[in-house]
Length: 238
Image (cartoon, rainbow, N blue to C red; front, side, top):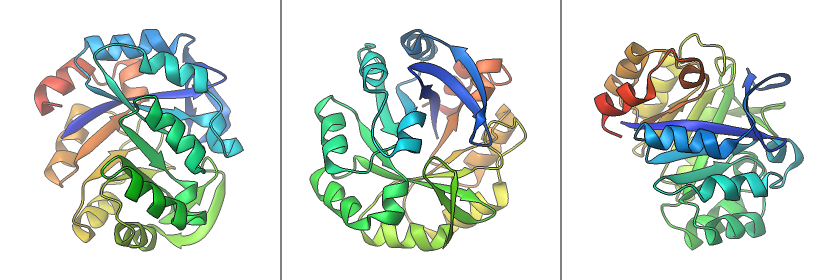
């Protein structure tokens, strides 16, 4: 199971939100590069970078910060947040980003997803951001009537080969993932699914591994120290 540290960018600095609420922001570090180096030095090989401003505005905003994190030697990054055009996706891939993560676009512009999957096979993931079983969009602030399983099936049919599942109500809460919903999703698809949101302990990581998670994205837990990133990387080997 891959262990993937998260770097959430807002205004060029590293923050965490509580349940995706932009009004409940906590700044963890004003130097995203320093954070990237810290996680790399713990053994991380991939970082999950989210442009929170981009997610809200519908276009990449924190380009300079993304490039700065990308410049850190020895670690790759995947980027999500506001990627709703071929131009933004092409720009990211041209900078050597390992993977683009699409959210709102998967709901509102499935044709774009198909185009990007053809252009960048195995380098496109879709984020399934859920609140009470329904997909949310536009930085988690807009609800939809679309069930997670429906979106997952449609994106699988479009050729998407990797998904990230986040229960928005658990994100940043330091409680626990929505194990039941995650396990149900994993059983329903034949492609890797990464867990995110609410992960707070090694024991929870072990349970996610047991139910078939391809990876786990860690945010607040590694910033406040409830999970030792180095220990998690050693135990899970990725």
